[in-house]
Length: 174
Image (cartoon, one colour):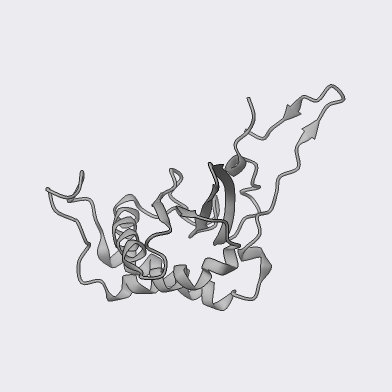
């Protein structure tokens, strides 16, 4: 079985940032999945579940209401490892091209007085939110993006080197 692209990233070298995870073609349209890495995997603590849930709600709402981008957004949701999010957009832009959008989205969390859709009618686990810690994570990531905007490592995945035998078998990290 082939290793999926997100598992071919060297998680010991990746830093927080905005990365292209994959580009798919559906009919005549390209669809791009972006890895929005908020914390350094296996070094920094993962984002706690309640805060991640709040960030998901607030930023999804922001993205789907942004006049320029709302028709391009297909999906915004957390990674299972709780170190970031996946953003799926129509088209194929370089990560630097969505930098301003994501910086504004994470900055918008600071202005939130409540978590949108955090009611029993609108959310499957409406009591599992933490707005204050979500604000802390959003501020930390936005400040990091702003400080490192000129550095390529926040836009380019580090790749893992994989051993390939003479007969084509690949060995992967576990």
